[in-house]
Length: 151
Image 1 (cartoon, rainbow, N blue to C red):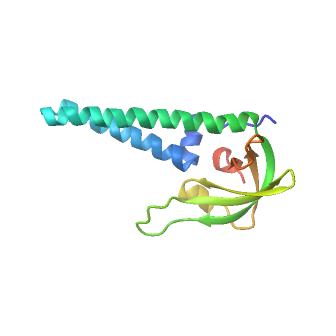
Image 2 (image 1 turned 180 degrees about the vertical axis):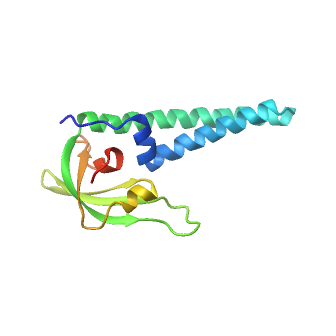
């Protein structure tokens, strides 16, 4: 079933992994350019490390973007139920996420989407949600509202 597709920026804002890759790439490339233009042989070598990290981050971001878009293009829209809303406290390295369950072809699945704290807080345990499911790999699903608004 075709559904509305999130834009590149909606994916970066909604998906924790994509957001991490985007910000990490931007910081690596910016700091790499800064080290290059501020001089010094050691810093110039560090430039290549940072630029390489930035390029790998961009490649990972593009792969993640394509992966999410392909599910929105070819996936099945279904109902699910939120089972957990996790928001880390303090200096935790964990990222906010929304866990949910759904049934597909008689089997029950559980999945989780990393997202921003704001988007996680907009969901509640027991809440009915709309998900987009990869019918070829039913373990892969995304909360539609995290990317396109709504629930």
